[in-house]
Amino acid sequence: MALHWIALMIILPFAGAFIYAGIHEYLRYNSQGKASYGLVYNEETGTTHVTGIAEDEEAYDPEDFDPNDYTNPEARGGPEDADRDKS
Image (cartoon, rainbow, N blue to C red; front, side, top):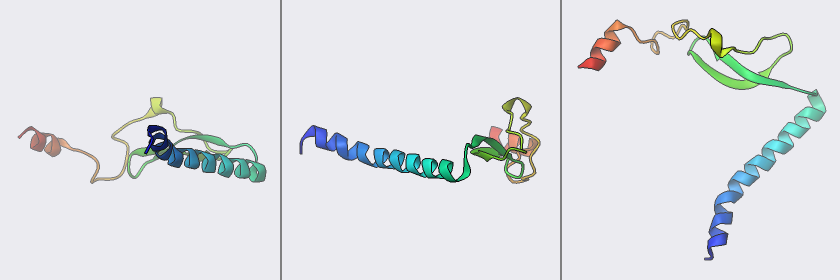
C-alpha cells in the first residue's frame, strides 16, 4: 500500500469529524442564531467545560477560581491526603 494512502486513511476520520461538526454548527446557527461559547464551572466536581452560554448568564472567569470552593468531598484533598502521599 502506498504511503499516501496510509496518510489518507489516518486523516480521513478527523476530516469527517470536522466536516460533521461544521455542518452541525451551521444548522444550529440557522435555527437559533449567533451563540456565545465559554467555560462553565461545575461546583460539585470542581471542573470546567466549554458549552454554550445563555445571554443572561456570565462566563466563567479563571481569575476568580478558588480550588477549595467545590462541594465534592471525595475529590477534595485534605491534610490526611498530604500525609499519605509522603509515605
